[in-house]
Image (tube, rainbow, N blue to C red; front, top):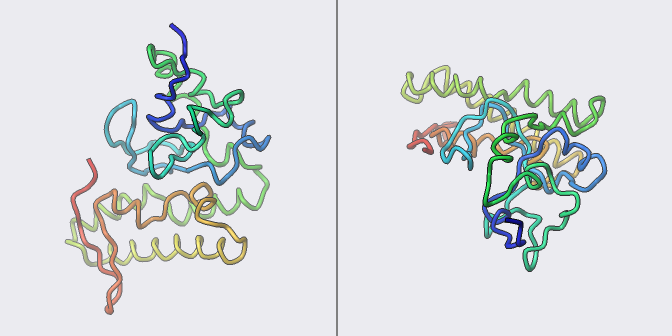
Length: 218
């Protein structure tokens, strides 16, 4: 069998990047506005596993089209904007035989610091945000929050991390002109969104921050 360019693979979701794809970023084939960071400790839907998993390591992937869910680079009549220089997962996937994709799927995943220059200001910002808003720590705080029934020291800790995450985003918007499309690569999803996937809804009230528990994504 061979590819008939039907676009089904592209419509099923965008690929994650691997270390060998770093050259696509450094050569400008892929830019920040096309990429989304999924951080270590973040609950995400795993297409291969068919369920929500907590990421054991960071990964960067292409964004989805908000309307269709297809890869953002799919255009027109099943046309990929970068087909000749498409990422490793796209090259490995054959819809009639997913073996090659399954073999590389979890290997040599690329994170942000595999893409941006290590001595750059951007790398410093990414590293500092991770240190101050580390998701595995947030997971532990959420566990404590449930033990405290939504109040106490854990609730205060969640509020502090939310403040720090918002500060980074506001700073990059105000001082670097970063739009939301770029922030989703540089800092990942806003912590409010990630908390909701963990089953916690932060709500501002006249008395401060209230944390409402909802059913976690499953």
